Structure formats: structure tokens, C-alpha cells
Image (tube, rainbow, N blue to C red):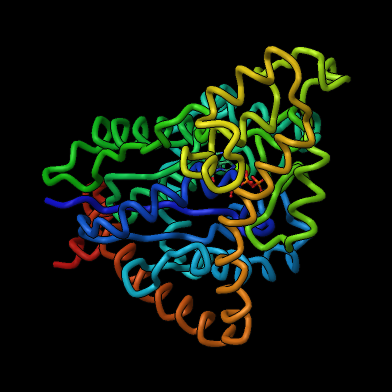
Amino acid sequence: MKDIILTGDRPTGNLHLGHYVGSIKNRLKFQNQGDFDKFYIMIADTQALTDNADRVDKVKNNIIQVAIDYISAGIDPEKVTIFIQSLVPELFEMTSYFMNLVTVSRLQRNPTIKDEIKQRGFVKSMPVGFLTYPVSQAADILAFKSTIVPVGEDQLPMIEQTREIVNSFNYTYKPEKTVFAMPKAILPESAVCKRLPGLDGKVKMSKSAGNAIYLCDDKATIKQKIMSAYTDPNHIKVSDPGQIEGNIVFSYLDAFCEDQHFAKFLPDYKNLDELKAHYQRGGLGDVKVKLFLNNIIQELLAPVREKREYLIKHINDIYEMLFENSKKASLVANQTLTEMKDAMGLDYKKLLK
Ligand code: ATP
Ligand code: MG
């Protein structure tokens, strides 16, 4: 049987370069290879509300933004079912049953949740929905019997949690026929792309941390962000030897630079190794490296921005596509929910004699 792919993003802001290398590139690879049974991308509005309960408008307005970002980055809605999480109510019924299979202490041990609690200032006042979002994410994945989930590294604990739920469900209810597939995370190959750092060099690039270059940023904004990116604080004079480790500009070059970029934008060097060696030796200024990175990122994002300008004039069509796809997704989830309840023995119709 071919794979069923599911992945998604929270509509908390526009998509950024972390999404591009962390997840969208793999999505495009799968989409273009075409070797799958079904491919779903979910806009996780309900999950976004778990830490944005009082910002419904922000979440609502970002649904279309994220959808436009997908399509302008190359996702083809003819091949991929893009839908809205809250329009598939079956997911929340499934979540309720899964919640009984997971302990509070297990959720509290989730390393991504731990980081996010600190980042969002939830140490003393965490919404219950936030702590339990990994369970609801398991429902999103399992409702579609997904086998492959292309994600960035921060999502690995969520996939692990989902796998544990499958095992626990099978152990508790011993279904005669398999209900859920065992999902597998697909990460980018290169280390830096698994968790692209933010412009501040502190945490991963993320919408909530305000440290991102967005796919929709204009030319001047991209340049301004790159020119102010964190480098090596001890590399003061051009002649000083520079550090590559923890230097965000070099992290981004690791993620985006290919040999052909040198021939095009910086012909004094053949490849990234040569550029790095010169920086480490001393004699290469940050500005030159940043301008090179700027050229690479501008080249990548110019066509994305152009497509966005077209799509922005067709917003109604995109909303209609999302609503239509959400109905289709709901039918699929409903079928899985029925199988799940049967396996649990919650089949009350059978009580009728
Ligand atoms: P928020 O700050 O609201 O959580 P986010 O920027 O973390 O937003 P998500 O919608 O949570 O984005 O993540 C969507 C997908 O993108 C996930 O698969 C996640 O692993 C991936 N991703 C997000 N940021 C990065 C990053 N900096 N590097 C690699 N992958 C990333
Ligand atoms: Mg996130």
C-alpha cells in the first residue's frame, strides 16, 4: 500500500524560512514524486487557539495567509488536500478518547512542550488545551491513517506520542482489524534544516518568537533582516578570525547555499568550504557574507512573492477550496472514528434487538 501523508502548520502568522527548509521542501519532494495514496495538509487553527485563546481574529485571519504561503511556495491544491482543522469535528471526538490513554506526567515530560511553556510564560498558568495539544495532534495524524509526517525536529516528540497512543489503543482495546497506521516522521536530511535558528541566534526560527524571515517579506525587509542577523560578536575587524559555529549567517548558508550560487554571486570562491575557511582565517568581513546570503534568499523568495501577488486577488477561490476540502477530510475522519468506536465497543446500535 502506498503512503498517506499528513502534515500541517499553525495559523499564527505567515510561514518563514524555517518552515521552508524544515517541512515545505520535503512536502514539495513528495508532491512532485507523486508516489503516495493521499496527501493532506492541515491548517491547525484549533491547535493555534491553545495558546491564543484571546486572539481569535489573529488565528482566523492567518488561515488564508498560510494557505497562500503554501500555494505560492509550490504546493498544488490539485494534488494535496489542504483543509482547516476546526472544520473536521471528528478530530475532537477522537481526541477525547485518546486523552484517556495518556497520563498528565507523560505530557509534562514532552521536551517541545517544556520549551514552549517557558517561551510563552505558561509556567504558572498553562491552559489545559495547551498541555494536551500533542494528544489532539495524534488525532489529526491518526484520523487519516497517515504513515508519513514531514516535520521539523521540534515535532519528533509529537510523533513519538502519537505512536505511543497507537500502541496503547491496541493494547487496551485489542481491535480485531487494524484501525490506525503507525506514523513515521520524515525530517530534512541536513542538521541545520531540522531546526533552523532564528535571526537572534537564540531559539529556532518561529512565528511566536518574532525572529523570522517570512516567505512574504519584501525585498527591503529581507535585506534589512539579513544585515542585522547575529554573527560572531568577537569578529570586530575584517582581519579578525571569525567563528562559524553559532554564526547564524553561516547556518543559513548551510541551509540554502549551493555551489552554483558562487559562480553567480561570489565567483572569488568555489564553494562554501572555501568561504568558511577564509572567514575562520580572518580577512573576510560580515557584510560581504551577508550580501551573498541576501542574494541567495532574494533569488529563492522573488518567485514566491510574485505568485502571492496573484493569489491575493483570488482569496474567495482559496477559501472555497479550503471549505470543500475540509468536508472531504471530515468524511474520511468520520470513517476512522466509526472504526475506532467499534474497536472500543462503543457500538450502541448493536444493542438494538
Ligand atoms: P509557532 O511559533 O506558532 O509554534 P512555528 O513557527 O513553530 O509557529 P509551526 O506551525 O508550529 O511553526 O510549525 C509547523 C511545521 O514547521 C512543523 O513541522 C515544524 O517542525 C516546522 N518548523 C517550524 N519552525 C521550524 C524551524 N525553525 N526549523 C525547521 N522546521 C521548523
Ligand atoms: Mg511551533
